[in-house]
Image (tube, rainbow, N blue to C red):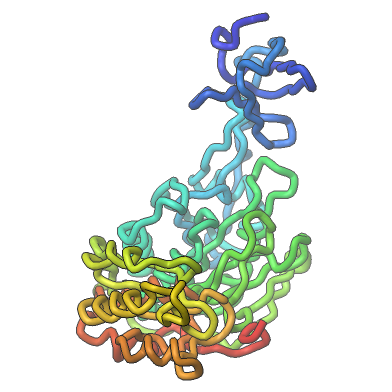
Length: 432
């Protein structure tokens, strides 16, 4: 058998195992596995010891990457700035390497998604090219600052591309940081890579552009598929939105509220489902950014909790308790098997005496109501904030960080104040 290590990467090969054979482009080996880019767009990894034979079908130089066509744009159309932070939405497969590469140039974006040029004059900027799991507050500040800078240059419509895993953290942070900037921003991602036939990248981007360029929308939202079909996209508020499935194209759902609008992909029809704030007002001189060294914790209530689980947060600036039910934690010694629960209550009280501790519902849908049962009332007595909140855990987390950054002495007063619709609950999703 030909030595796998001697085969030039990006060659097209056939690997034969004891059970099957696989054809694809041989990608660089980063770990212990041999990785092939299959014609379906998926990658498959095989341990070398399972490969019984290998056949080189074509060398890498025979593969060619198609050059994007020349695209003319209409400068009389609304300007649309696409800020790219990462993810698959602004990427395409490079047939010379078998990998997916990001494209940021306006001509390349319009070549990939020609629907854009019918409604917008596209401009673009590379802000980052990262997995959303690696987001930090500094990245949220960077994106918001680029929006402000381009807004000063006359741009009023923005798409921010993002990986989907932490997309809702980005949209929430931008909602608070950009709340006084008179522009419309949609955060857009893709659940399926652009090198797959089922990719949702083009439709999500086209629907976002259609919405932004046909409405005087002020604020931050999210544009993603409404269903698994290629029919409509929903425009969701940037706060209290959440990724609710690991892979489905309709993974994003509004929490405790309905969508803002629906965009039909086929006929480009935009249906408003809420009254939108108009993009009016002066551009501010500065932004209420997040402090980039803040430490905010998220701690879930669960069975078999121990007091020691709270110790790491003694040096944090804030903590979100993702509580069970209406807002509960295991703080009652019901019997001799619950020894330590009163100590958990004491730890929470000690933390709440030094840092803001806020409750959010791990049920996701519904309201925190710590007046109903005794554990909730005990948490309030211990100093836990958030009774009456309809904010998702992620929105609570980002809002707590934003308040600590900009109103550190008024966190208790302002946590339940509605800044950008985060406390405005309505619609069928309140009790899903």
